[in-house]
Image 1 (cartoon, helix red, strand yellow):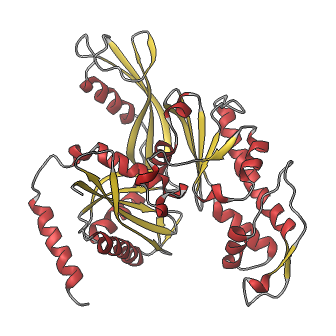
Image 2 (cartoon, rainbow, N blue to C red):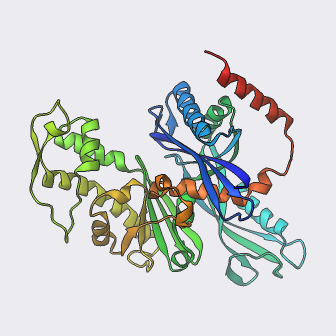
Length: 411
């Protein structure tokens, strides 16, 4: 195979760090192969805040090193995708006059810059500005206004911000392991782009991405992102509820959630069977009723779904999304989640599938939890020329040499 571009993506979770090294083929840029993938469990992050910088850098370096061994490639720069409980999405509108009778790319860039300039940014950093729609003179809901004739251009934009301290700590950790950050993509953007097709975006759809401590909700209409929000509840809350009410450890509660939890709803009833905890943990010798376990988990899932319903109600889309509610990440694996969602959200529901050629995707990353890193790859390929317009970077060559010596020198 003739490789054209070799791209590294790093996905940072609240409990794991994933590194994936890809390569696009010279003959067909739509085809790619996976050269290396490695996942490292980490306890140095909680709710995407770094608790132990040294431990985080060690875990990050280990993930990179193992992926490099698999791919026989040295990683010098990477695209980063992650979530954070400090993410905030702000909607803002702005209007400017055009320089000439035709709208140019410079006019579009100027109105987007102005839209973010008047946002309260106390201890916040802007990551991305995503236009929902443009208006030119008296025409509204324009997707791409370039080369249209108009005297004024207006934009309604979604501004993605993050706590500055959190972002600076992540940048410092990556710099300390000699990795240049090419771009950062919030998973609130990447997961929908890799999971939803054009028809779903056109006919209104909500994508629900449940993480450990947060749940991300994105609503699309007529190909545009019209609403996005972060709900401060996730999988860890389910685990904590099970641990509290079943009076077991967090580790045992996590096993019960992953292996024995079944959600109940109006249409699905759970049989009242018991399981001996001694089969799971030597420290416990009593039984727990599976129906009781189901009630504990279902109550928390219903609460999260009610929060989602409240957000849909705020934009007048409650029970009014013809292209369904789509679940990704580990939340999609909860048994009977789709039935519970149909009862609470009053919407048809299903599990999202990555919208990439199945033949090109390794089985290990075909899981919905890899949706964000897949789109990270696609965006990286799309903007490759922009990030690599300079052929030689002498300062980076020096840093690469230092990285090599750092890995071969004994401690």
